[in-house]
Length: 234
Image 1 (cartoon, rainbow, N blue to C red):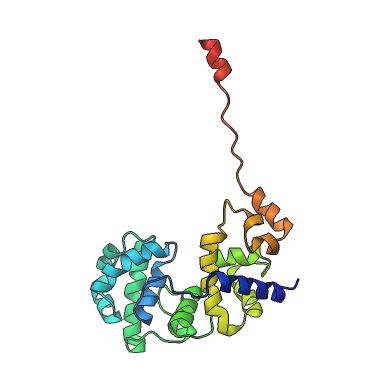
Image 2 (image 1 turned 30 degrees about the vertical axis):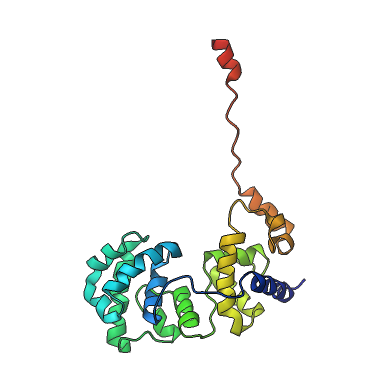
């Protein structure tokens, strides 16, 4: 089976599981989505969605966010991982939006990636989810699934993004990105996964891949039976 044939079958399964793909990060517009995606680095979407209501009540525009200042932003997002650096990034990108883009989030990869704290994956999420432009954001979870299912050699996220763009149509990139996130969380976890029962791994993952993943699972030795020594000591 070629990668393209495998991707087509995977796409049908994902459509059955997730015919609708709501964006998991709560937001109101491109700016609040950008902020939420920056906060989501090394933090769960659920945690971000707990933090952003209070943050957006205080500042939901670049002007208001810049006026908050780093210290106040940091207090509001303190339960997110990497809060100090994220606070600096949010203050910095807000000032940059005001000074360079008239307070609007640019629908342009190069301009987005030039903002403080915004990398290629964050820019890709904003481009596809806020502006409907073809982009295929690849995080560590999608990178893992692509390698597990043989859609990419998955040596790095850049290579994985390139490979996934080749086997899925551009108009479906945004949908498939979200479907992969949902499926990975709910049906295809990194650890403790039963490949044989998985709707996709059961046929898409190679035996070598399954064996390699199982070899990485630490084996815990059973505690020693102390009953005999206990009896001797009684």
